[in-house]
Structures are given as C-alpha cells and as structure tokens.
Length: 305
Image (cartoon, rainbow, N blue to C red; front, side, top):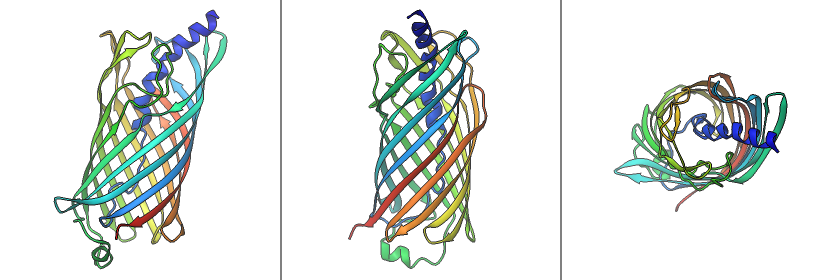
C-alpha cells in the first residue's frame, strides 16, 4: 500500500502532460478552401504509446503509457463577412495505462472516461472568399491562403480531485493561431503558429491545491502532395515549447521543448467519403510525453442545398 501511494503521488505529474498532448497536434491542410454549406461528420480512433519524461525532482523513472482514443467529429463551413469560415467540434473518449518505477518497484494505473471536448472556429482571411458549391467548382486556380483560428478545450473530461491521474484537465484551454497555405502545382506548403493559454485548475489534488500553467508556443509545418482529387499525402512536423507549471505559487517546473514528425494519407473510398490514416512520433524533447501515435478516421461530406 505504501508503494501504491508513492506511485500515485509521483504519477501525479502526468496531469502536466495534458497541455503537451494538445500541443502535439499535426493538422495538414487545416485552412484548405471549401465552399460554404459544406457539412461533414466523422469518426476516428487513435493509439498512442511511449515514454514520459518528468522533472528531475520527481522520483519516478522508466515511465511509459499506452492510451486509446475513439472520437466523433461534426463540422460545417459558412460565410463570415464574405470569407469562408469553419466551425468544428470533436468529442473524444480515452482509456489506457501508465506504468512507472518508484525506486526498484514498478506499478501501473488505469484510467478511462470522456476527454475534454474540443471546438475550433477558423476564418480564411485571404485567398478564399465565401463561395457556393457552384461558384467553387468554377474557380480557375488555387490561391495563397492566410487564415486564423481559435480552438477551445472545455473542462468536460473525467476528473476526480481525489485522484492525481485524470483523463480531463479540469480547466479551460484556448489556442489562437495564424496559418498560411501556399499552393505550388500539386504541392501545398502549410505553416501555422499558435499559443496555448490555460486557466488555473483550482481543484488540483487533493482538491484544495491551485495548479497554473504558463503559455505554450506551438509551430507546425506540412508539405502535402495531391495525386488526384481526394487522394493526397503529407509530411508533418511540429515543435512546442514553454508550458512550465506551478502548484500553489511554488517554483515552476522545467519548460517543455519537444519536436514531433509524422505523415498523413487521405484516400477517397466512395462519393463524398474518405479515409485518413496518420502516424507521428516524438523525435526530441525535455519534459513531457514522447509518444508514437497511429490513427485512422472515416469522414462523410455533404452540401447544404
């Protein structure tokens, strides 16, 4: 029992990883052009596994985790001040195990439940005015796009302040972002810059602690190649840094500085349907999770008449 208590205390640092997990986004073609009135629904499933590195003050070594996460997504495009806008929501669920050593003893913790719901609103500021499907089909060429977005993570995930390890983060998170997409023949070159901002978790373990986190900067770069309509492949990369945390105003933990690489493949399977497969892995990092993630999803698209 003493070992279990020590393990749970040390593994409490896993709560610091929720910010890193969101920063690990790799989203090629996030600002691609679409006609207004486009609706889409999709389901996905992902598996992440790998090592977790903690601040040296945490007496925990050889930590690894495996998590599974099905998700449901809904979205629509519409016109906003004459520009294309996109509103999408993803509802994820997750379960998995975290295992680690405290001294020469090893143990694990299992968690499952609803994860924090994510909503994203994006607007293309340049390169893609709001167009009907008929107008969109008649366009002569693709344009250089400048877009902006804000993502919101709601504190809707499973959270118990009597437990150190939770699926949800029990706080709001906001990610304002600016992105550009440059078409070069069959290539699309994307670059995004964003920052994650967090509200405090005023009910951190054992329910009375106050946990805060500084801003986390995130950069993404993607190069994708279109074989034919609906069939494309992308090489993806991201870097994120910052995000040190404090508990009850104490000394901050070490800043994150992590890099990930990945690839994405989109395949049309039927009219208005496609399948997307993605893989990514951490290649360097300090504090946080160095996960390898493989995911797949199905999407159905239709147009408002």
